[in-house]
Length: 559
Image 1 (cartoon, rainbow, N blue to C red):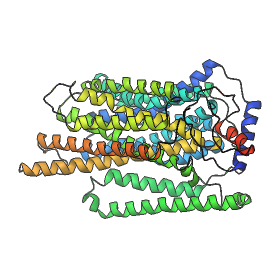
Image 2 (image 1 turned 60 degrees about the horizontal axis):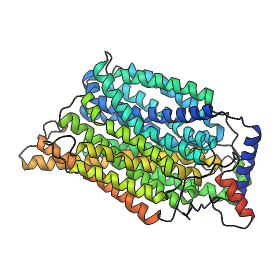
Image 3 (image 1 turned 135 degrees about the vertical axis):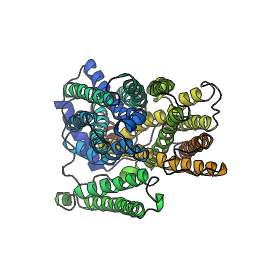
Image 4 (image 1 turned 90 degrees about the vertical axis):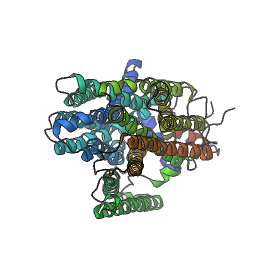
């Protein structure tokens, strides 16, 4: 018999409140048609597609935007980073708001932000304005993604349907990445408004998603928590801390003195201190409320924004899965970024020709998530994570060994096919695992934590690979007697090729570390999918409660 995931669940009181809330939801909740359930999944998945495509569509349009708005090359990355900065750093905050005050409300708020600021980006007349509006556009993504995961977790109790819903949602990541590149390349090159068209498209798509969500989503269910208050101190500490850290990761390599620049060092130290204070503050709040729940009503002791015990769920495997997600996205985004530059700056391909070379990634990404949906109830988590990470590592190795003189089918095509396995397997199986190990009133926060790790992984992977790329280009240029200028525009092509290869070796190391962590710590997790359909009121928590009342070990019901 296959092993099932053994959950380390929270206290019986929390489980009792969650079970009571679920029973209330059953009594008062609407009976949903199959068509409406399908539209819930489609709407949430479309939100993920738009969120990811908002990054990749801009990335492929950067050369055109640079010429149109006369932006300095070293500042171009902020048109991408500004979105990731705001969306990544506000995920926990909006996830908590969604859990407390309603996921549908948070989703609709995020959609309105996406529409408004996407239009604003389309009318921007200079680089600074565009970067600022991109930051506000990212706020919409921070609100919609954790809300969407929470909506799916509530709409689909543990069953085969949940596995399919989560795998479909996860497919939005590769589909969004490919869609952004496809539509970005086509609109940038073939429309009269060029790069502005991608923002108009984003606004129109977000508006349709908002209408669909308004119609199809269930009404918000009140939170099971007794005290519904926001930990504003914790929210401020983690948001400011992450903003500073992500800012430094993006700016450190292009600052006047690089990583030795005084303000880079100062901001990094302050950011790390603030994150440390956040962790200490959350630990304090969790201990206080556990000892005396009545103190949660005090202004200075609200329920924590993120319980640190969340990281220890499933005997610490939650933390391992989060770290693996961080590493896989570092590898995946690093590969995507440098391959795109290799095509456009080294091979001098147009945006459309570059886009065509990424089509296999889109197709395989969809197939990966379909595969996960079909077999996640039959194979243990470690199989998905280890195999996916190793295949991603293989893809990065292929590009690290690339020979530009040979055909696309020799290195580029197999690399493009294999690169998505790690990100897709980890995201699909990982989000199912996260939903199974968190309580109903924590679903959006847990999803936000998972998404935050992927966003930080994105910034970290790009930063480390950029350092490696620049170092390799400088060394190789020096061997050829060339002193590279600040912007790197005079670097010999042969030196750039060495830089692209070394950046891919960096991504390889990230993927291999993810595979090693999975092999060491996830081998005993077992299956995270569900083989049988369970009634609406049954969940991991209610089943665990039944076992606990019988004196049994807390774990999901066997299939």
